[in-house]
Length: 327
Image 1 (cartoon, helix red, strand yellow):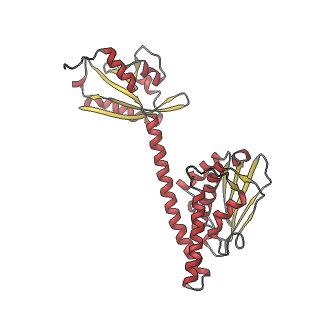
Image 2: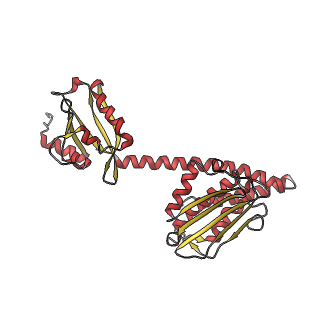
Image 3: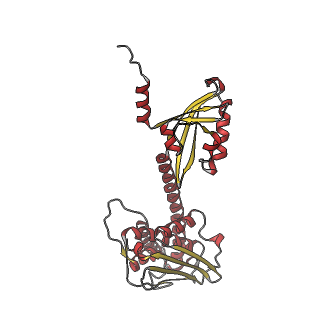
């Protein structure tokens, strides 16, 4: 059976189905001509040629020099090329993949041909995977450091090896329960928790004498924390506790931790106060991914976190929306 010939209409249908935008670049005039899909992608008028400089104005400032250099270099390259970059359409950021063929030998009357693909969805998925991988790496490192710190804490009060093993097992089990609170469980239809219970489970592993009977003191009103907010708030408290074990009041036997909360209103304020430990500085506290995690999580709760590094210890003030906290 002879091969079927493809006419321009068939090719156009195939290109449309693939979501491909076609373009041509006149090297001599430095102007681009795009089809209607390309014009819509870049949010420019459909029809007339667009000067490369005008099109470059839509490229994200962080990518602009790289893209301009890549396009300029295509005339010296041999073979196909591909470059991914961001463009700005109003307040929206889109990821574009430009694909073509380099070298003057592949041009026709000094015109280079290629395609644009909208790869925003793929890039957003990649960024999500990178964020998840970074968060998992951060948590694993924290858990290893916490396990080491809990071993040291337990050794101070244990009178025998069996006693230490039993007490350390209890603390690690409590740490596991706390870790479950900061990990969303697929299909879990729970309704959140009471704020006091949430704090109790999270901080139980760190108290030498058991939750709230020793150096960790909690005074919060009875209020419900919604299912979604419970996970977010748990991440914040877990991060603060981790840093306290590493650098703050919970890293020393004499350190104290007080957690208080005002009467519920439209805005909730929780104050985390450390005392009796080493002097803490910003360089020794939550930095890098941990710092971003704290601020991002509080934004999700409709509020913010303020860290005051005082001589007597860290004071963290958490403000959040009562509506968000209950959702």
